[in-house]
Image (cartoon, rainbow, N blue to C red; front, side):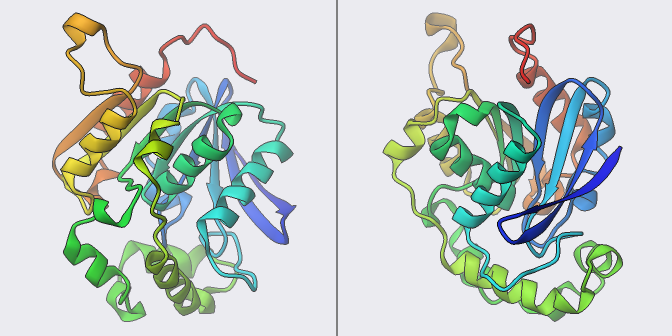
Length: 265
């Protein structure tokens, strides 16, 4: 394993590299870190892949800087890191906030994306349950006291006192949820696996809508299987989804290993 920092876009961005093989980029959720979201699944992927796990601005080991958290900037930071690492094309697995970043990369820079895994993602405000939208913008630091998010941040963040600032920036980010058009989602050309918990913060109908926009929802026995896939994990919430390691690894590995003979740099 390599733990490294890259200076780019005014940010000292932390990343880890595990294993060797085709590159797989992992993008964590809001207020989280590599350890929380991917700590248990990385060793499985790293057996036959080069896993590149990234921590965004103000998250994990990556210190905050004097700028807001916005999707476009996090997309630019992620792309800058991939270019810094000379990654010409990669599979990308994003969860929650990370899935939003991954989706934007697939839209804005399709040449960088081989296959795409989007876990708990929405492309507009309507994709969330109404009560989620009402509650998430009012997140208070004390709500997360004693949580794994706070414990890990206190332990690994360069400036643990920035926790409150991070929550404030994430609250502002959540108020500026990007509303993309169905036509924009339909433009994604990378084969995509859409994953959702059956009790997620994303409405199941919205996950199905994304799946259909990406070519899914067809009678495969007649038309053949589409390039994209949909997985709904039973008895699973937004928070518990990323911990379903056995399910996630088996489904994601099978999805990514399609056309495995095609080597990517």
